[in-house]
Each structure stands twice: as structure tokens, then as C-alpha cells.
Image (tube, rainbow, N blue to C red; front, side, top):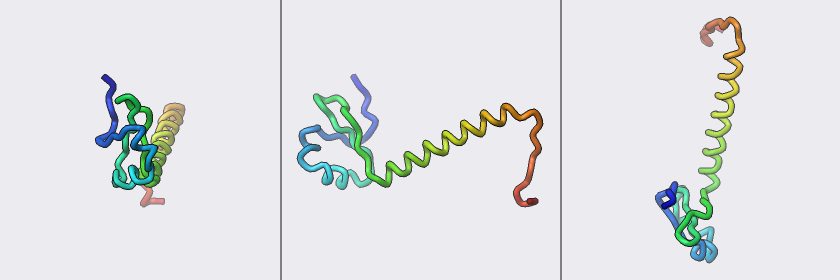
Length: 83
């Protein structure tokens, strides 16, 4: 059995009839589009996609910061209020 990563799901046939309606009725939640009862893809609202992209960018930046901190020989603590 395959795990579905959303609360909402719809058949691909139903999705093809009116994709805009499916996204609108989901109210910003992701929707799993199923083909033969297995997830074929997920659809999300533009607002949720923007949130996902922002979280991804933040994670990439955090990874970069951590890797650069490892290469620093001596770190100095700074209080931003003192700057």
C-alpha cells in the first residue's frame, strides 16, 4: 500500500473534468490526484506553493550557513543590538 500525503484525494478522471474547481474546493490544502487508486501527482494552490518554496529556500540557506560555520576556525559572538 502506498502512503498518500494529503487528507484530500480525487480520481484523475474527476480532476480532468474541472481542475480549477478541485483546487478551489480544497481551500488551500494539497490534493492527491489518484490514478488506479495510487497517487499520480499532487496539486496545490499558488499560495501553498509559495510557502513551500520559501521553506525550501530557508532550508537551503540553513544548510549553506552550517557548512560555512564548520570551515570557520574562530567564531566571534556578536549581539545585533550592539551594532
